[in-house]
Amino acid sequence: MATPRRLLPSISLLTAFEAVVRTGSTLAAARDLDLSQGAVSRLIQALEGQLGVPLFLRERRRLVPTDPALAYAREVGKALDLISRGSMRVRSNAGGGTLSLAILPTFGTRWLAPRLPRFLAAHPGITINLGTRLKPFDFAEEGFDAAIHFGGDDWAGGGAIRLFDERLVACCAPSFLSAQPISRARDLVGLQLLQLESRPDAWARWFAHHGVPGPVPQGMVFDQFAPMIQAVIHGLGVALLPEFLAKPELADGRLVRAFGEPVAGTEGYYLVWPATGASYPPLLAFRDWLIAEAADPDGEAMLPR
Image 1 (cartoon, rainbow, N blue to C red):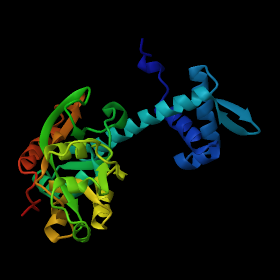
Image 2: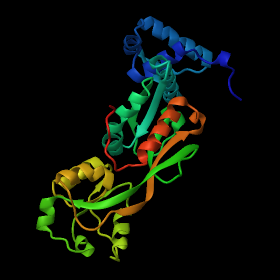
Image 3: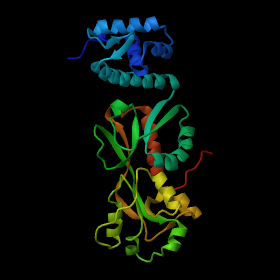
């Protein structure tokens, strides 16, 4: 049974408690909160009295949080962060709203960011806050309104729409190709093959598509495309890169196709959101705009006129 709201500790008590645990002392917490040290001590005592549980051990004028207090501080910190995000959302743009969006790092910088000016020009009342996440997370805990996700339609507890698929092209530096001539897919077997952590089967699918059976040799593993692209440019090997992400380097000659045409992957890029925020107006506006942009994912990002 939930505790009646009238019995819940006030924000001032919880803020003082979280600050003492986070900073390590009542003096540091007082500086953080712009209060006197005595006021912070009184707030801590009031919280302990309301909860009926000692939260700190008093050792030589020091407050040492108990194990239950440390666990409580983590939960209080999450709650205060959500309240802060909500307050910022109301304060920042009462006429439009704020959309907190989790993005994949390379997708965000290379594909989404160049297109965002067009969205903001069409929706001047909406503010977008961006944060990077590589893996699925709990929307309730993180406080995001939506996320760009690569994988399948398997994000729990919300809605999703597939934006576009991914086509992978084998790329290398021109100098690498000159030193290692490649005339058939099998020639890649003995080379350094770079791969992304989130796509462990990409090379196996590529070789199968080109009729090369057998186990695929293991190469360097990266957790993001951006450093892998730089590694390929500097001649460390051959990488399977999404065609739309590698387009600038292929166009200016820093990368070349090692062999073959792009091979379609089995997964795709999705916009996902929590069920509780499905009707949030900034999300609806962003979703409609993103669907239109994704209709031509390989097209050039156009700045607003």
